[in-house]
Length: 205
Picture 1 (tube, rainbow, N blue to C red):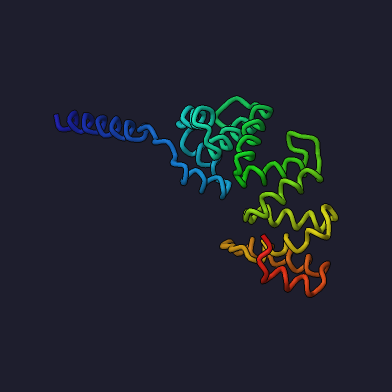
Picture 2: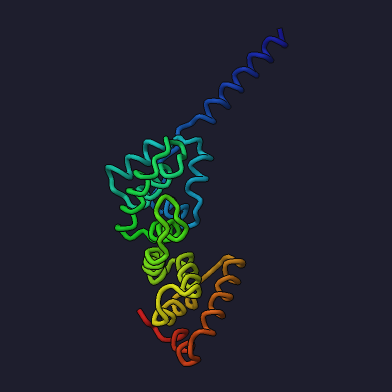
């Protein structure tokens, strides 16, 4: 008798745990999604949530026309995360979010054109995307922008502006901070000393 009761209780607990684990997730807030996007954690989070929010993300991207959702939806389509892979349509939504001013979208388009991912390799176009996101304060783009300037792309006239934005950025990640210092030191060697000092302290934009 007691054994039977034990198994009934155990079965109930298992069913309860299963129902709890399948509780539908609430759609991410705009601020939370932006945080994921800026830290490049959005696809990882969507997969960790067992793709439960695919339809909600799609609706926010297409119907609500929200840039961060459009970017995430485009990334999902481009790489086949929780949906059938469709890079052409994915790029459409990434470009759409970039036109709305989403900085990670601009930076990602820069990387795609620099490396030839889904598009024909075009370093000249890549540096334009990097520059736009860099001057608006996106650290990843600032570092890529300077890296390409050091490789000979762009113009020496861009050195001061590129130095200024990265030098004045707040970088919490230790490794990224060290890389930023390395890039700034290399760029400074290509600039007159007065230009370096001016770039450090004078607001240029």
